[in-house]
Length: 145
Image (cartoon, rainbow, N blue to C red; front, side, top):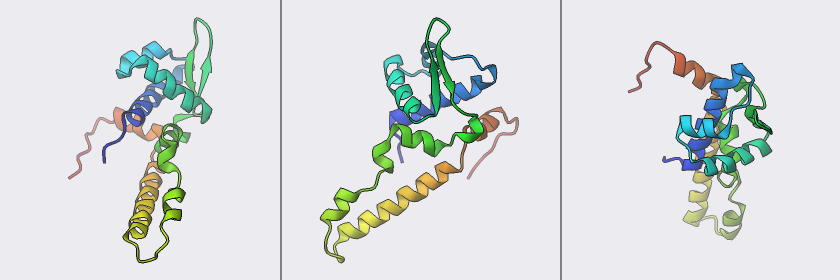
């Protein structure tokens, strides 16, 4: 599954803020953009979604920027995913209401897709940004086959 750029960029931005969270100093958009190679204008849009979702807070002024609204251990990948891609995590109620026949393959495909999306988001719910920080600082490489 290929993730949209907005999801990847949102994860990278939150990861950067998680790395900087111990300093408790707002991180400027330019800093996040440069370190994570995210276009600044796109990053501003993402931060707006993340702020509305209560994941980040902002500070204005010369020393302004963004901070995590809560510790990295309380921010899951699913929460960030939902904040920037609400369409994915919403139900497909319009599609389902147009499927009337119980023998219609569309109904079975819709149910399978809904189940797969649920499993995907359940998995993301188990991974926090603290987990990612711990993985990034681990001395022992982890190989999966």
